[in-house]
Image 1 (cartoon, rainbow, N blue to C red):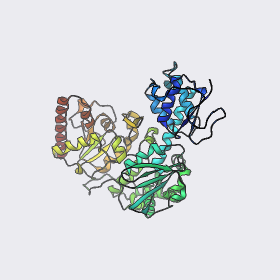
Image 2 (cartoon, rainbow, N blue to C red):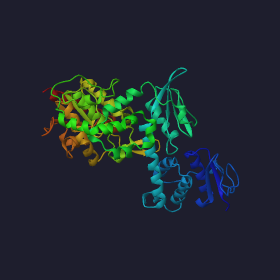
Image 3 (cartoon, rainbow, N blue to C red):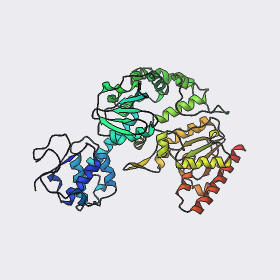
Image 4 (cartoon, rainbow, N blue to C red):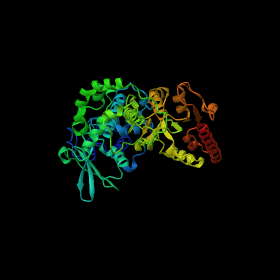
Length: 495
């Protein structure tokens, strides 16, 4: 059989690759007889044409039947195809061929060279996407119609088309463009379009808010937790030239020993003993200077410093997949402090706790029992969104005991600073984080548990439990029981 050449319309055209792979499989064309390339690239030595299909006679696309493969393969392939490895198309077809020719359980063999290489490629692509989320910086220019935000980024892989939706969700109200060497993405407030690539000179080096951002970064820089090697590993120097705050890193590192010594001399921040003014924990428009965050008598500054520490924490490998850490919000000195499990998909994007479906149900329940959410403090036991990527969806994955233990010190310090009268645990993960052990929610629900090292805990269910109940009558009954728990918790806090 002569070699068959397949030309794909783009470097990460998964749908086109999938359609052509089905045609090859229907014609029983083995992997070694297929040459894959992208339109515009030079053809190989054995290709018979510069475009289209040639050399063989695979069936028309309309007759190519669907292929039965494990669910994990399309999800893995859709990510790995964005890798820059020129052999990615051939590798994917090689794995697909084996899956459909007697090795249906191939993906479970992580030691297999093909599978191992494919998983490594997908991991590299996800890490590149995480870097883009974290290190892309917009600069504002005045254009026709108002402000327009431009960003320059140099991805390692072909990720722009896949990751543009992330920036649409995050910056839906702005007009922006992301320029990369090979392509560009543009959002006008209503539609997302793509165009040719550009150069770094297409984006201004700085704008009016650059100085404010550098001041904010200096304010949240924690000298006591400085680990230069880990910082360089998480934020490689290749990204520094496009990030305004990196101009101050050398100075901040040089000042770190003196600042850390001053922190030790000042002593620990005591817990809040009285109700303080309300604090909304999104970054304020005016950021305090770095030394102001170390003032031991100010719980507001202590909470801001803890928030910065949580946002900078990427110790757990899976946390790097999330958009951002989600810290708590509410007034210091709140009588009631609610602890959930972890952020969900919407919380991960918004950077705020309890704003998704379970959060909206929680807010409705608070309103029904007369508890203003603005007078409560709401947070989570685990601060990052743990999920399993499935195509374009992110499926919630429950945190394990190790995850909960990792975030427990953050949670305890958060509670200590806020100083509530009562902590309400929502679900099993929150209860474990507060007590340090596995406790059945059903047995402890509705009781006030005294703890040796913190305020008492009132266990109840997580609102997401109500959303999962399929029976309408059972859901209504459990919702009323949840309302009763909230009323009891409010009474206990007052007492």
